[in-house]
Length: 213
Image 1 (cartoon, one colour):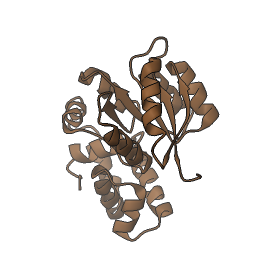
Image 2: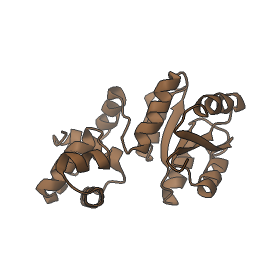
Image 3: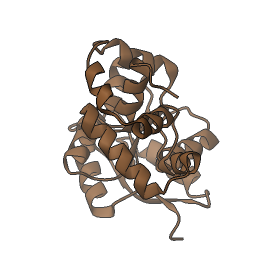
């Protein structure tokens, strides 16, 4: 189906990939379009297949998941990256989010929750658990970028607040009675004015500077 969410699995363990594929293939709206066993192969496959969502392991031989994520961003690959990891240390998850991941789940996640996470990041949500958000914020200079907030218009502040709530562009458009195209323009302007790379950073910036919804 044309509306299926196209997913690429990137993990160095074949058993993990097989398990993920087995579950995801029974979902009516999710299609596994390919697999990769390391970061370099994952980047190549993502460029070839143009998936909507990449499920990316962090720890892999050769190019790891974080470096692969950075490479995808350098290539301007539009795929949303959902980190799937067995590592609970913030030192592994935080760099992935800083590199542009849309969120993360653990490998022991409930299957239905995994499917929900895929749908969520595909819709434009940012999956950021409180303890990791705290770790990201604690690494920032509280005053960093404060002045740039004054360049935002009132409408951009409204959009930023909704981004911090994890709203997708479609949901923001409905809430503010705007077109999705207009919302995308506002989001682009916000990122440019605040010198941020993505929605995750925008959400964190909003929380840090008291502009969260």
